[in-house]
Image (cartoon, rainbow over all chains, first blue to last red):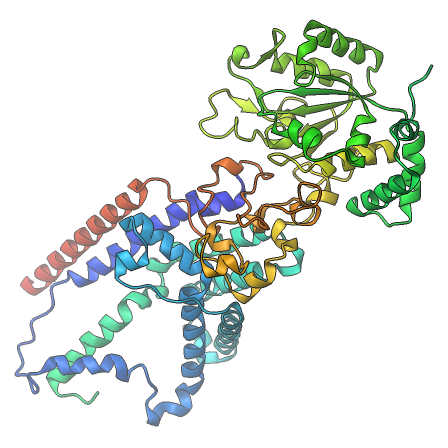
Length: 229
Length: 349
């Protein structure tokens, strides 16, 4: 079995399995917790209105803009680039379609009711490059800013690495970098994605699953207590 | 009287000097040599004595033999191939019966240490009776013939890497030549079948320089297997632009767009199909509208469906992922139950 076959086969099966185990473990572990009864009189009974915090926290607050602008801009640059590359690059869509076929016996349309178009490779390359640049910028910022450096731990740096690696290896595979064999670059890309999947549930990357639920819950609590969002 | 040289032989077959020099120049190019070396190839070929060649077809479909001997009309490549002294090839000599076996034994004795051994087909290591020739099993025959060979050419994917006979579940225990013979230089010329000019190119190099070509990590001549099909594919610009055929008869397919989505393995397949082409340079599979199936790569038959894109996973059965869902759910429920108990205890305390 060569490296690419290993990456496409056993490594993929194991990493996805670990990912599923970890994500279910953490999500069920949190969502099945008993919520503490709030015995106070609600100042605003329509607590659900607090769900708007999900959107509000996705945009910088004017009064803090000076301090958060860098993080906001880089955060958006990275996330948009990463997610568009992930979901709109033709080979990635083929991967998802294949997963859909495995799960439902049909294609994406059959499984989720719709499919989506792919973007030209030039746009994907540009967005990936922006994403890589943003990741490098936030790393440098983390390293030179004394406060951020002080509060950073292994999780921060390793999560950064496992996010950075698939982007770089993916771009290298697409560009057939430096004449390296495509199958080796593709294998490295898959293995880096698999490392990301394995680490995902156990580090800060898990925020992808919890962030909106956490914001919504916080918003509803705030709303009930009459706090300003 | 000594055996005629290759040059004498070709002249006797009516090959003109112009055709011969043209062949030498194109062979130099194929081998990645500077054009100036064409003259040296011509001189060396003219004077080269016809080497004795013993060809052993084992577990194979005769496609490799067909490719070399019948691919198209009489060409210089074929004549060069004729110009070797093919002393044994039992598929071609089947009618000769026992006499063919005597010819093999005689050639091995007369040219001990000097003959080239060509093997196509894989070697069964299970029951010796799976594949026999004139009562001899393949494994014994290979070991005997390899012992006195100057070098071995493993022709076709079966001989080079096990090929289709070696594909799962490999009922005959098929192995490639390289797993049996360890003490002789082996050149792998994979392909199902390999391109005719690749084998003649290897022979020309051997006749000209008296040595085998430079090989890659998988034992293939770099001159022919140095680049992927994708590297030299005329449809590559469509890949770069993200223009793919979705089915074999859609608008994209008619416009000649990239076949990546239809399972083309060109990006991971090293061969010269896109440049040398087939049927006297007419076309190659991608040009005919079908993706590359990666036939010159080890284990190509076991690398998933031929129409499964390269970017898709190999999931095996659903048990692994299904088990993961069950284990994850159980762990989550258990840890939540534990946390609830702690909550209750804390409130009670």
